[in-house]
Length: 164
Image 1 (cartoon, rainbow, N blue to C red):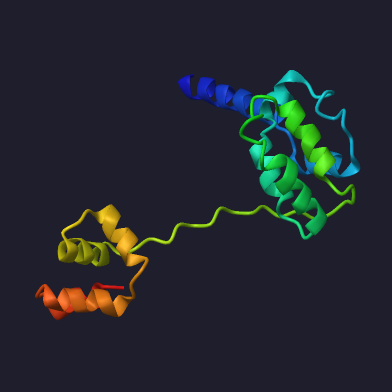
Image 2: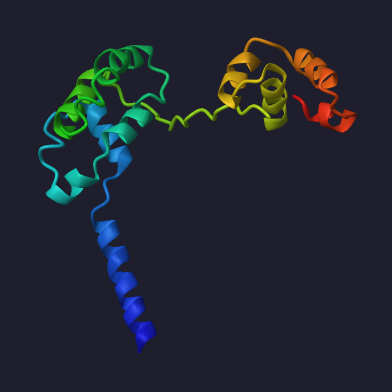
């Protein structure tokens, strides 16, 4: 009995989530076609599911240099200032489009390059500074310098091999 209740509840949640999802490719198609009234005609539930940052990421993933220039000029400068006004952001995105249908791809965020902790600890110990300062020092030196520091500090060869 409890299992059937849970199954019905999950089924209802799945139906509701499918019902109020906005298709990103439909939004991009409307932007490319220059439809300024598309956002105005959406239901309140669909307007809530419109995410300007996500649409912007998708729009930046194409080969149109003109569109990228327009996005940089108009949308990038205002996206965080106008985040609470998605209608205006949508219209800026329509204005930034070159009105040609195109194939989009999602631009993933670049991963941060991490510095090995052994390297930072070596620099920190050598200079007597914090790890944050050691990271700044690391950007100005090469690996051989850090390995020499490890040798001067008396590290064994296994630890020096971990310095990258």
